[in-house]
Length: 598
Ligand code: ADP
Image (spheres, rainbow, N blue to C red):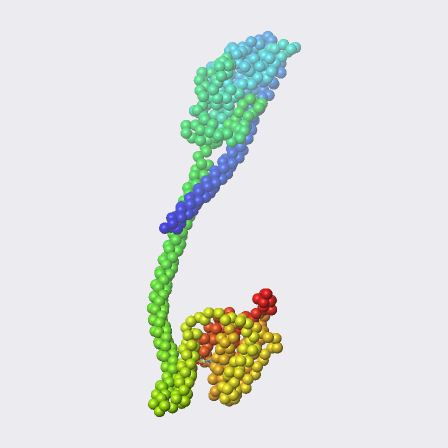
C-alpha cells in the first residue's frame, strides 16, 4: 500500500518535471525564434532608415544653394535697395524655379514683404505678401541661414523653406527664400507601403506616409511650444493632437516597441541633427509574433506528443512490472505452501520417530531389567540351592547326631550367604552413591600390585601374559584403596574375558603421569568392542555375556567410582585388534600433600 502510494507520488513528480522542462524548452525556443526574427526586423528596418535619411537629405540639399545664389544676385540686390527691377527679377525667379524644380523662389525685403516671386503670375502669388512672422525670416534677419518646414500661409501647401540673408555693408537688405515641396517624397514612401515619419523638434509629425498620423504629435505640446508654433503659423489650422502611440518596451536607443489601436509595431528612429528632426520607420510586429507563435504551437504539440509517448511507455513498463510482481508473488506463495507441507511432513515424521524411540527405550529398559533379573536369579540360585542342600544335609546329620559334620554344613551355609551378600553388596554400590568417608592416599603402583595378585589365578588359567609399564616415581591419588582396586580388577577381568577365544593373549597395563593427572590404560588382544556397543558399555546391566557369566554392572560401577574421584574413563578399539580402556585420575601434588601434612 505504502509502496503504491510513494510510487504514485514519484509518478506525479516525474510528470510535473516533464511538463516544466517541456514548457521551459518551448518557451526558450519560442523566445529565441521571436528574438532572432525581431533582430532581423531591426536590421532591415535600420537599412531602410538609412535609405530614407539619404533620400530626405538629398531632396533638401538639392535646393540648399538656391537662396545663397539669389542673395548674391546683383538684380535682386538692386530690387531690395530700390524696388526697381521687379519684373525682371520675377522673370528670373520664375525661370530659375522651373529649371531647379523647386516649388517657389522669392525675395523679401527688410520687413518681410515679398517683392518678387517665381509664382508672380499665378493666382496665389506670394508677391505683396508679408511673411515677416516666419522664423526662417527672423533667422535671416539675424544674419543666419533659416530653415523651416511649414504649411504655406498663402497656398495651404506644406513645404520646406530655406532662407539666406541679403547683406550689404553689414546692412540687412532682406532675405532670399526657396520653398521645396516634399509631398512627392512622402508619396513615394506611401506607395512603397511602408510607414515612414519625420518629426520636428517639438515632436510634430509633419511628414508621414500614413495620412491619419500626419500633423499629430509624438508627445504632448507644452504651452510655450504651442505659442511658438502659432506665432510662426507653422502648421496653419492643424490641431496637432497627440498620436495615441503607447511605448510598450524600449529595446535600445532609437528602438522601441509601440502599440497603436491595439496593434504592435517596431518603431526605429534616427535623428537628423542638422535639421533637428527625427526620421521614424514603423513596422508591424505581427509577422515576428506570428512566427514565434507558430513555433510555440509546434513546440507545444511536439512536447505534448512526447509527454504522451513518455506516459504511454511508463504506463506499459509499470504494467509489466506489476505483472512480474504478481508472478513473483504467486511463485512465493506456491513455495510457501510447499514449505508448509514439508514442515508438516517433517513434524509427522518426527512424532513417529519419537514414538518409535519411546517404544525402543521402553523395550530397552525392559530388556535390561530382564537381563538383570536373569543375572541376579542365576547368581543367587546357586548359593540358595547350595544352602538348601546344606540345610537338608544338616538336618540329616543332626538326626544322626553327627555334630562335627553339621558344623561343616553351617560353615558352608555361612560362606554361601557371604557370597550372596557380596552380590547384593555390589548391587548396593550401584544403587547408592558411596560417601567418600574413608578417603586416603592411594599409591597406584601398590593398588595395581594388589589387583594383579587377585586376578592372577584367572590370568594363569587363561595363560595371559601381562606387560606392566610403570614409572618408578610413586603416583599418588586421593581415594579409597578397596574401590580403586575394584576398578582395576573389573578392567583386568573384562580384558581377560575378552581374550578367552583369542590365540594371542596379551595384556598391557600402563601408568603414565600427564601433568597433574595419571593415566592408566588396560590394553588387550581380545575380540574388541562392537562399534554400536561403545556408547552403551557404561550403562548398568549392559552386557554381551551369557546369563550367569556377567551382570553388566562391572563397567557402570567402575564409571561411578572413577567419576566420584574426579576422573574419567573411556573405551576404544585398538587398531591392531582388541580393546583399550583408559582411566584418568587427578594426582595429589607434593605441595598439596605437604599442606595436608602440616
Ligand atoms: P560384564 O562384564 O558383566 O558383562 P561389564 O560392565 O564389566 O559387565 O561389561 C560390559 C560389557 O562390556 C561386556 O559384556 C563386554 O561386552 C564389554 N567389554 C568390557 N570390557 C571389554 C574388553 N576388554 N573387550 C571387549 N569387550 C569388553
